Length: 452
Image (tube, rainbow, N blue to C red; front, side, top):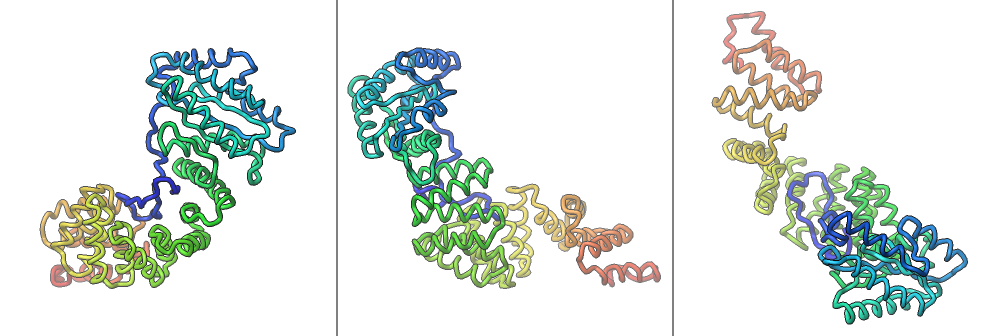
């Protein structure tokens, strides 16, 4: 969702998700710390035993905030020692790095502490962001020349927005995570993209409130950031606050009319609200920008099915399965479309493919069982599929009705009647079928097949 490495993510299984850009959040990062717990413990012990009041990890934020309580301007650097995990002597490496950090702190009236076994933090009172960037580059050059290694550094300065002094260290950590996208030896100052990446992490962890908080702060830093508006809109969409989501997506599209994610998401939000005309308008705009986005083709096909235009739906759903052959949900909607058009053979093939990809798709199970029954083949499988679908979704009237039809065709009118009555209780009109079985009971000589 963040600006860094932003590109469209063509989902493999999306049927209800909004379209996101990828920031790489959730992907495994390379190992940075020592390879063993013992090495980590030794490294921490060596660092925290150094003179000039090195602050330990557990007290870093509290102690730094106390020392900076009367300071109206300061910067924080969080430095990660790159390739630390593979180093044969991590303690030596850490102590050599700490020596350079301590020297910089002495020269610029700063202080330092241990952030983690492979990370150090430096605090520089009276130094603004530009000065901190210069200090960071000086440290990187020194480490590169003396040790032939690199440091990745995140920087944050105070004051910034409404951030408390205690939050600046956290901001520097977020900037470091931002810097990781650019590879070892990078330096990044805290900005809206850093917050967007942090919001991504909250989102991936399922903390939507945390993500919203980060994205709102990102917009406070950069009110015209298209990706942040899209990310915030996705969060509102997950919350089912479609009005707020639409406001974000429309704003993103206004800022960048060529942003396919915002157009698609606005269309999807309109689709969720039942405003199919507006949904198609936005989907069409997204398709014109990038005709190869799976979600655009898939959801366009779904809308045309909803408004009972299966001929138009067909071209989009066939395109969707070509764009993503692993999407079981797309195959199921394609099968539904074939069924609507009376192409039962094609529907059967598509439903079977859908079930191979998503064996728990109750809709496909029910429809395929019903088709097998209509085609007069695989009676046992037809009954098994329809029964299983009804067990999976016992309140689905259509599933109960189809199961009733299969029972009826297999000459089990009592079981059929029970399913038809259950379908009626679920809101599906099975009155004719219930009446038919009642007439059979009253007139046993009625030809059941003739009345089917």
